[in-house]
Length: 372
Image (cartoon, rainbow, N blue to C red; front, side, top):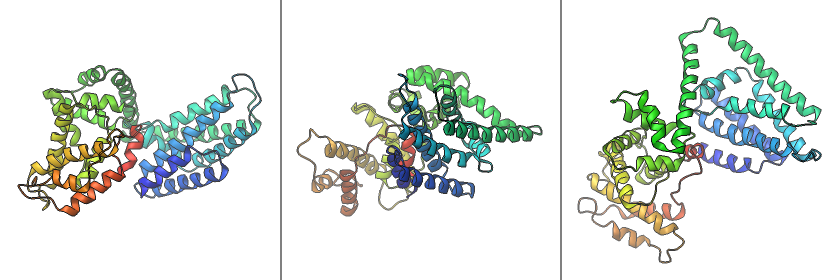
């Protein structure tokens, strides 16, 4: 439900040029904040809504006010920006807002720079837009004032900094380093991996690479697929470590496969798909070897490949003769140690994939929502 709610908010945020829509999205954001500070696990949802609604729309509205030709400021745009800034001011004025945001995002190596990006947008608003309306200038300065007061309070607390406080500052340095590695990886994967090698032991290298490509939010999904699909012992080891970062214990095979394939883009070469399917199947079976459904690893491997073929068959517009339920059951006959998997199970999987294509999301941030 949390993931579906955020998907709705993301879609609505792209159309947030209406006061009522903005009002209700902000109510959701405040509700998520209240749940988060009371211990409910909605950090991912808060992050996505803050990023997609506040930061994305703030940038869009600021860009619309830029007026490169010196034309008059659009009053509608100015009004919507003013409304959004009122909402941001209400957020940043909350007790502990900046500290919690820095602690959970900006100072964390694999998290977004939410406060850093907010500050950059506000600086652009103040210093790069001529003839800014007074109310917008005042709201922007108010937000900066709240942030500066929070920073002052934080500095006071750092005078007697604990090891935890100091470690947060060191983590921010690590984050800057990983950002540089990500930029190189997106240019050419091997270039980024070289930098990870320099700071890793030989024994820890595969896991460090796997952790980096699994959790760094700025990596290109196609480059991740390109790296994981390489045919060498090292890349296979990294793929194995990468799969260890997934927990499939409570997921059926189809959902686990969707979760896994949402984390990268894979090219269509059969040999690459074979390697990835084989290692995925082994990882999934580790969680489900005690299930009554699968007698051994073979049906997991065969059915996984069959699901990928079914997905292509059902959603390839060039394919005029689609596989039926009966065809799908026939193709998987006798794969479970000579026996058939339950017909109702295969029918359910067939209908799910027919109605909902397995596809890679646009970016890593949105991929996190699918299985929350």
